[in-house]
Length: 422
Image (spheres, rainbow, N blue to C red):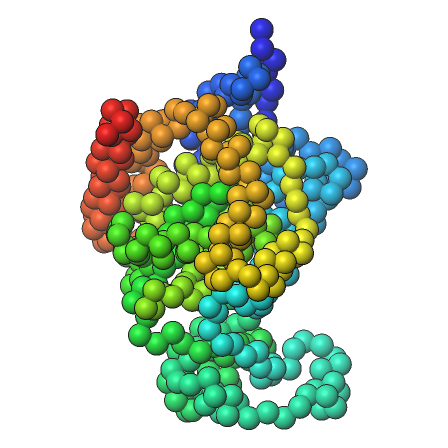
């Protein structure tokens, strides 16, 4: 009889409830997972509580999906402890949170030769909460001409916090008056000025989980429930591949495994504008059509890491990436190919695909059946009732029900085509 091994996946959560409920439901449906060596494995989940912990406590979790520690320090320190002392696998590593900001991602991607718009970091407008601020500022802050910097970048431009986060503090600047008003309003936020990609054709957002990426047509000016357009052909095949490579490059570079990335496309050129998100959007009321894919990818990658005992690499190693960036024999496309190779190596893409094919072949059908079930319909309805006022419930039940019904139709066709080989 093949040995059985149990694996516990911990969920470290804040205010969200929809996708955790979905993830838990799918994990319960997984059943026995048989690996190539004949061993049987089972996966269960647990929502984590916040409580005192002894640094020598032994955790029960094999893997933790973290959606909280980017802003809550107590669980962050617990994550560091279980990673350093107990080899618990983390999505995402807290050791690169300082890099999980627009600034570091811009620097890395510029160094790698990506088409990041020109960006300037300007000093704080107002004092930070530190008694030494006034003295240091008076003695060492060099006077600068904000308007001259903006003139050099060119209008329109964007002012946004260097660390980003939920579109907080982002302003489109069209003239000097708006520039000074936005800077005055920035307060204690540290701000970038960034040249706009004027006349762009597409705003794309890529959600990447492990080695899987979904690039979606994103419309930031729409309400959240309508920002992700269901559009399968909005990028050319070449641009689509580049968008995936850039997203997976930044994730592998910084050791992030659950991250969303934003880019603008103009005249076939991909311009990264935000490539660091410690807590990417996976709400059913925003992803809708793409929600089942996100849950499948998160489930498959979490199970793969837990069951195979994948070893986490939490620290950034820039050398192999910069060796490619500095190779004068490679043009841009050659560097993209080499970066994709490093990303595939980091995420063990080939091994992962084989694991999914041999140990998780039923996940597609399982997720289809679940989305088509009363259990999912109750989850969707409950989420709508928690998110929107009562007078909008009927509208949104029809809206999201229709989009997920479209996914069921498309997925049924895809599964039928795969089964017949057509």
